Length: 394
Image 1 (cartoon, rainbow, N blue to C red):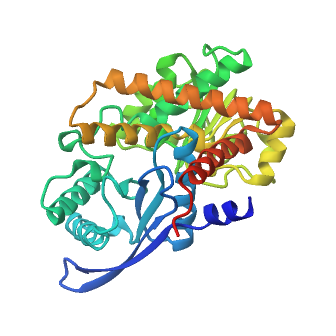
Image 2 (image 1 turned 180 degrees about the horizontal axis):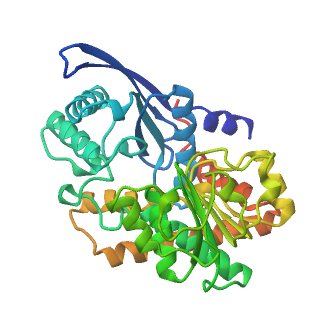
Image 3 (image 1 turned 180 degrees about the vertical axis):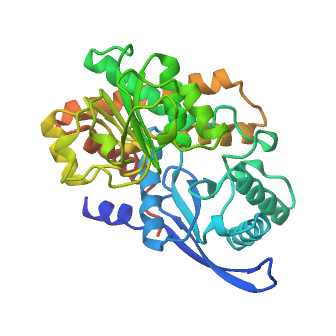
């Protein structure tokens, strides 16, 4: 419906704030921050806060809409939101970051809350940032409100399993895709581009499950070894010894972070940045399954090429939805004041991801479309149906 399309196209609310901060050198700086609420149709808004020098309002708008569809695909009762502050966290002290975070939170305190908008970490922010947001908001409302944010430290109402959630979600949907295609984990070759939280957790969990990780990339470069990598040793190399992936002593053939995408494998898992697979290079993808751990790693023209090649695509709004799913679990636990064991979190996550995968595949087969279109159809159907039930308040 044309009217429904218009309603879902535009954000519910856009907020711009100007954040004065006393810097360590005594000077006053003013930072610009944004928060966009895309949809409140199915529940409170949900989405991360990013600190980066290239944050724009257009980017925040797009990411907020993305969150609406991601939450709807896995059928959790949130709409989409996103926030950002234009700053370079690598050039700021811990104290400066805290002051930016607290003032940003204070400016938004009227618009966030457990029943309004529930932020989370994103690029350039972490669990400490969320602790500051929670504390600042709690001071304003005069009582501790842990459910105002997710991705918090465990000691402040965080959830077990949150750190691994996105990577675990990737592994679960890859397992489901293998079963769908009649393949087995053993000796299934995986290439992972990106070795941050999503990439490293995916590598660890898939290695433990019996997959063979043959290619890994970080920002410094990539390694490919057809015999597979010792992932615990690689994790120790990168995270304990703070060394780049290409210098890993076990060795392998070196590639650029983008060239690794086109080496022989069964599963390709881009978990870095957007627009990595384009119309110019999609024909070079050798994988049978593409699981998008990053947001938007594949362009629309590339999608058409991959579909013609017969690549089974697990789109980003499904593939990396494990993170927001466990964020939802954290919100539920905070509101109940009752916390689950890690095994319970993982079991519930598996149930949600498997069911969501099956729903997307069912939509694709029923309507004769690819998995990405099916995922968006499913998401828009859910939001649109909820909107029709609620009606328009006038």
